[in-house]
Length: 307
Ligand code: ZN
Image 1: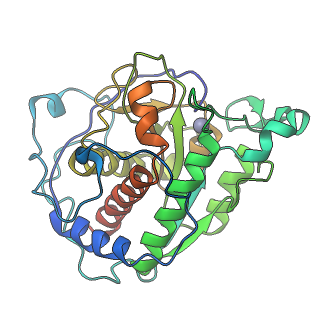
Image 2: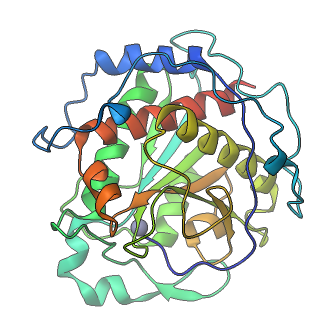
């Protein structure tokens, strides 16, 4: 969950890449991470079960993708999403993962509430995040995805930097999370969240930065990353639609988030679904869906870094 949105939304664009997903799928089957949530959730619809390679995604150049965006970075790019070259395609690359919030935030309101500079204004150090009606917290979901994603990326040869590795701590504050990833000189980074939208609303949303000084050099690259992540969701996790309640085709720009305002590396924040919607919530609590989201994000990162 993030603060209420503002600013214009922009459409993404599409392309396909099945080989990347096939490589990631093989990696997941051999996962040695073992750090994810216990497999105790109800079975998922077949449409969201992890699978091997899929057919290529819809081609780019849809009518929607030609709408004016008001900024660069979302134009035609027929050479995007090249297949992964090998299982070590991320060798030498550094990837940052920020699993939003933390399980201990619920117990330390005074610390979490202290003000930090987010690049444009003062705001709270962090929040508790949202949760499903059943009490499954966003903090737990975020870390589950992050752990699976870390395993996938390491298997592809990347060095992974995470802003937290457990769900029983407090913070770190949102400005510190950006500092950790910036200091690591990550080639790319993803902030993992799930939203607190209206109960009737469904779907994922990708939040992209707005130029504010510190992040000026990575605006266009972040937009390309956002497009890659959007296309990966559409291709690999079709049971989770683009948001039906915010953004434009699953993408929106935000100028009020420290993670995006302060980044000096290409980064997006992904709301992987709406925890306040019953259908989305059933998916989000599932370890199988969390693995699928991780694989989807890994495929997008490999595509982004491979061009
Ligand atoms: Zn959140």
